[in-house]
Image (cartoon, rainbow, N blue to C red; front, side, top):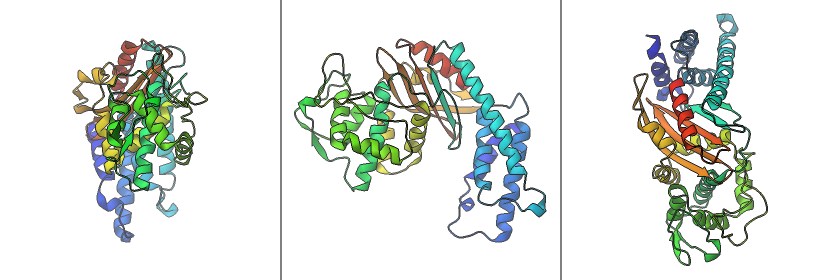
Length: 353
């Protein structure tokens, strides 16, 4: 029975009446409170079982604690300390999971400066060096650019089908065959940027949005460690108005961005997901998950990915489902030829779930 508790708890936190438009009747609020406490307690107890212990098992605890937060139990019920106790159990397990990610990075030979960040569901996240930016973000910086593009278009009620001119001055070498000197819809430029990793399309979108706007919006959204300060450069050709500093991102912020992209249901976010699902680079997340179809009797399905690499760094951020739980995993290494090591690390992370 304990092995089925995460599914039960996840289903419980998704019941529509748990977030009603109007205040709940007192009796129903009490039922919700007791059920949340009981489920969280059973999950914490089950987490002491070494055969059940995993990040996938603890994600529902985080969801239940969030549900309990607005309505703490009454002191006279003798339950006031239970949410605090459950939170302490969860914090202790998060430390253990973070240590496990460190061991995975070492066992996979990701090397000094490597990062791994994992989110299971919307609230349970752990990391190893997740707040440390790699030497450079490479094409991973294209994820926040897509995020700000969609945000700005929705705020100004501008269609993704709006065409803009692709200035030849933004050309640089990349994998895409996108044509400069003519107009393209914003949707096409964004898709080429994410799916084909077009540097030229990225540079045009940076001009369209403006670096100052991108960075101001990222800061306002809470992404304080992500900055777009330069356009992207291929093998030799520098674009016009290249910029004046290194781009910057962290694995933790990338995971939060991916959570946002896969949680929101508007047309713009759907377009980002569709582009990530067309990722041409299959050497990391796609390949690592291609041989894993079931994990602890739960179906594993790759959803979308963005990879990035230069002569100084290699990395990937991708989304997948474990059963009905959305998961996000970001890894970077300073070994530019480390695709195999990243695949090994992904496999080990999946096994830990």
